[in-house]
Amino acid sequence: YPSSTMLLLSVVFTVFTLGSSFAPTHKTTLPCRKSGVALLSSAATDTEFDFVDWAQDNGIILSNKLLIRDTTEEERGKGGVEAMDTIQPLEVLATIPRSLLISDVPTRAMEAAANAKNFSWAVDLTAAALAALHPSDDVRLQPWVASWRDGGWATNSSDLGPPDANFGPKAVTGSLLATGSDNDHNIYAKFRMPCHPSVFRAARGLAILTGCTEQEGLDALTCRGRHYRSMRDSLECLVLQPSERTNGSNREKRCWDVADTLSRVLSRATMIQLDNGDTEATTQVAIVPLHERLTHSSAENSKLVTSDDEENVLLVATQEIREGSPVTRDYSLAPRLDLDDSQGPLHLLLQFGLPPSAW
Image (tube, rainbow, N blue to C red):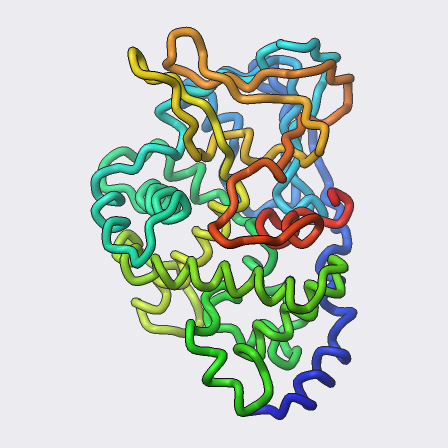
């Protein structure tokens, strides 16, 4: 194990590489039009998922004033939904069947979540997302969930710097979120480090990137790690086919998939008031197609509401959206993990993966 001095030198040496992952990468886009909705397809994309096709196949009605394109590397999965014409307040931008929301936990996922060490909305929603990604019957949601690539900071190991960086990508176990244990303070105390070296280095990187203190960065990372470990063993059974990785046993790969799914769930979740027939409306945590990828703004210009027939969720404009402007939501209003006290840029980067341009 390295000495604390060696670790600090490593952090200083690699500090600038941490920020390099935010450098914009421009993609060539080719326009095409489908059923009144403009779609820009990336010529450089390696995914076969087409959101507009999937939406239309599953009953989502999109306004013909929307332009939907692939997000750029700089946007980190948040953006690409823009006004193609001026949109007036209260115009419906999308009508989304409630059956396409990730909110209600199917039986298989519920049984797995019941064995978690701690109960929370994050456990339930991650279980529901894993069940949708690895379906036993209803396969409608699988292509959409499988298309999720971006999540919170360090879901992609490139956020931790170049592959050969000391205590960077090569030192994490599966992903940063899955690295370390609840006993790290005792394990690494003799090296004068508060936790696993990779987590310690990442906390310093977050401090440099966001302006938070090192302790604030470490507390936020530790909070996420504890939540992951509280659900890891109970939810790994929902992963029917683990992702291909260069190392690790099948169980380790399933656990790492749980970590990646948790990070992607945290970056997409929202609070929504849902009407349920004769009962009073309840506020639930959910992931809503299209809404989960909107651009961030503290002055959001859209809102989710339940339709009069209670069968759909409507994405509605709350103010005029001019041609060429993005449709936005305020990610700071999204649910957060218990005991997560992160604020400002640290919160926006770590939970949602939002780039500096969104802070």
